[in-house]
Length: 298
Image 1: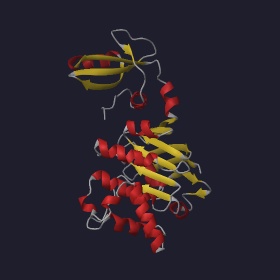
Image 2: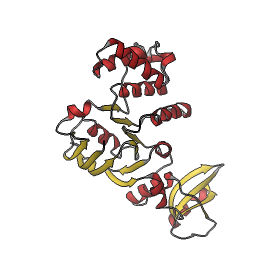
Image 3: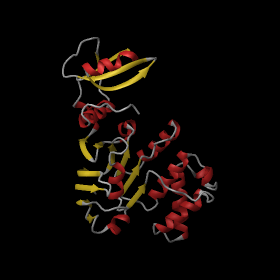
Image 4: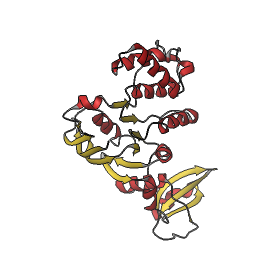
């Protein structure tokens, strides 16, 4: 059931290298693909989903050569893109019935049972008769997930599913993903570190089309354990500290700036040790990849 991506490359006509020698091995379970906007995540997801061809490399899922036989992958694929359209005047039940038909569920009775079960699973059963034009963003995302699950996929790809959702809808969607069977390969592509931390047993960080880190979150945290330090400083002094220390992240708290810095030994100057967070690893690796430029906090 393993998904193997090897040496995948893609350069767009405008010269942008969206994928640069991307190699990943993804086992069943939740896999987080983490990276900033524009890192190449969506390009990679569209390529795996057979929506575009790479310039080079290979993709294999089980015994399927994805690039040579995309039809076979589509039979076992569920895909929730970052942006998708729905017919606003149709009910959730009707839309899901339509997509279940496209997925090959031809028996009316079987299809009805499937549709109702999926609506229960994504917590939309009570709203099944409502037009989706009146749905919130989170409700639309959950309906999109139901559509992706309609064909009982063995590979499920969800691209930036919680972007723009309020905290309540985000939690509902993450709980939905967490309930998907362990025998399914689920790829969660996101720029939100918390989504990966809360759900995924394996992850990778991608930036500028390159994989810069891959592994289990617990093991990845070990790389900065004992090397992260924190200090609260006046906002006006934050830039001065950036010239003296390897600042990984900066966030505002009660009018002051809380700095996280990376140092092999105690930097002194009032810094205190802090237990590493996945966000620290993320910013640390991105800073390395961008020549020390610290990304803005999400």
